[in-house]
Length: 252
Image (cartoon, rainbow, N blue to C red):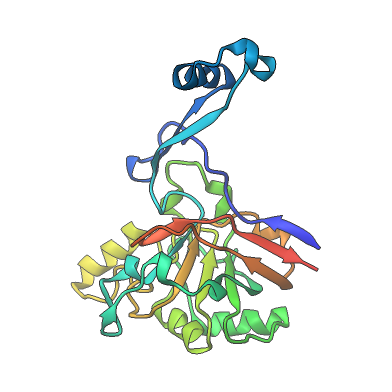
């Protein structure tokens, strides 16, 4: 089996990243660990291997949506289909280990909508027979922009109609290598304000469907179109609207 990592590393954000998506980690080395061990237990360095004790990292800022992550229905609305929306710790584990398919939408411009007709055409091209609980991954190529301050302003988005089509065909986990599943927020916002209409802003997120999105995937170009399994278990965060995950594709 070949394991392909589809996750970005969790690391300190570079300068210029907006505050709402920053990650901050502090590092404590083995020498600091030895000092702490001495304070806690009285053990001196001469009783420690190489005079060292534990290294420790502390994440001081990591939003549940700040890295490669999975959204829960609770992220979209408080009620989905008339019922309280599920949090990330309430979703079935079998959603997150399933056959996958990669659909190529690198040709789509920033702000373009990916439609159900286009998804069907890509499925036909890939030769993948879509089945219930398959995990569908949208390859836009925007992972190349990860780490740039304007990353969140780029990428096509999956339409609400296409999201409904996938859900109606049994898909419960859908992923993308852009910042978000929808079109970039400012583009949706301008259209919603210009038309003065609901149902435009955040349309696919708020499609009233209990499904999970993987956002900020990486390395989809290393995958075949089909014939792989996706493993994407999210951290078990109580009442979490999302959770980081180590997303991995397993190719036989």
